Image (cartoon, rainbow, N blue to C red; front, side, top):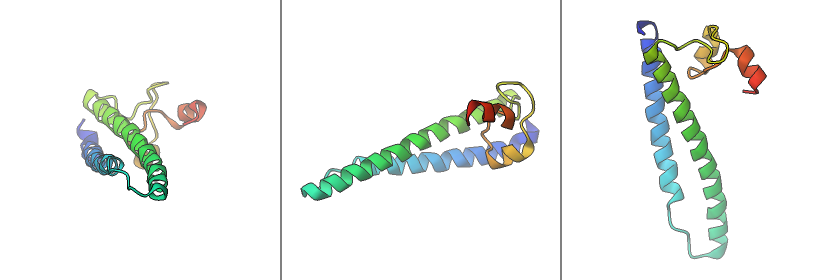
Length: 109
């Protein structure tokens, strides 16, 4: 675990940022609609976009939490499909990767 302590800290920071972002998105979506019908239509469209962003943030939060759990269990850096090591470059780019590039390509990720 010592090997990935810095990665774990970075993932925790990422998780905190995502939680903050999700909180802001959730707050924005809960704002009451304007009385003007045209403005309501615009707000509804914006809410749909914000909801989509919120779903993306929730997905990323789940992936980050799973990566932290893998570090804690000593399984970080290993492909969850084939068990082979995930390339260090891939982990630098997507630190919550759970699959090696070969398995991710086959799965369409």
